[in-house]
Length: 57
Length: 468
Image (cartoon, rainbow over the protein chains, first blue to last red):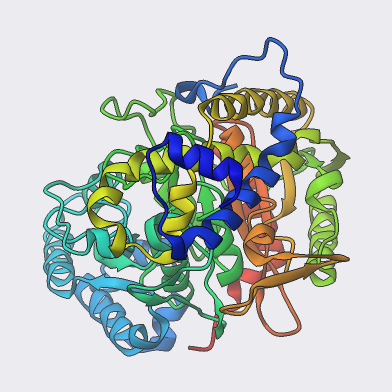
């Protein structure tokens, strides 16, 4: 299994059935690729969005 | 009532004619139920049809009209609900075997509002399982099909609602939208779909996908109909912690867009469009210009991060809701949705917070841009409608998974919470609809709908109906 996925699955107490490993590896890798630009953002002092005010200006 | 007569009616005209006692709510409801009976086996727009309850409600509506009682704006009009709205005594599956026998004890908050306004609910529409997907290829309840060509997708996740409206199986429907799930199906089925501002309509009693990006809203044949439904379901709900206490504006659909400043975010939303979509967008922008609006190029640099921000927020929130259900019922989930949800289990909490911080940046950028324009206009989707089972899509020189392309232009407004509507803007040479998206400032649905109505009435695409 893909090493990062294995580590995270172990940490989450999740044993992935062998027949599902390939699909989940692929989905996990896709998500990591999609989210990489967000990990590279320089966020400085920007706070998290507040869902209670998500639509307000 | 003959099918041809039924298909000429809109929600607004049906409601007006019921008030004038020109149409019987019972006959109207019977006609809609007959069409559902005739078409649903093939089109799979509905998961559950409720003929007895609908006819009871229609008879009560008819009695009220004939006895001169004051009636609500939707009085006696048949409509449907995506099957993730709780309905008292009627099963609410969320499109999953996991909830196959789930029968809520109460109506969702907005369902109560619809009933109070006099709506006749004919049934619960099909959806992508747990609203986590954009095709409504549902392994448990069948694939909801496109009204214009049954070999093509109806979009998702509110595919059954869009298909039902496009097929005149009722005069409107409520959907939900976390990444485009109202606007994508509206676009591909050639109907109008409004995602209101985050917090504008109560989420209480609606099965969640991702609390911080879930929105509920209407799908209908025309902008006027969508505005009518929106006016009924909008408003503060103190029992919903995400509900915003902001007064609902009046919605004057006067056709006037003179002087309106329209932002065109060309850099991302117009990048590598399918040629037919691009032509339709150019024609639509010329229409706005001819109607007196000013077109202004704007830049939303953060838009290219939408996929990463959305996934990093949606996956863990979805997993959080499903964590307990997966322990007992994992084998009841469809394979695609189960895996999508389970990935949320292993994403890092620090990355979730990082995405919420990036979301702040995206919202601030959007607010700044919306300070210089009144609305934004984009394609609803950058590709033509995919066939059922079509894995990859082409737009310009880009080939990518259909699901990625379908949500490219819509997710941004779930992240920022801005209101956005999709409406028809033309047809491809294959006779499939092309959609235009209009987004506005938070809580300014009035301007979004006014601009949409002005374009719709001038362009006239809404008059074209599918042949079924």
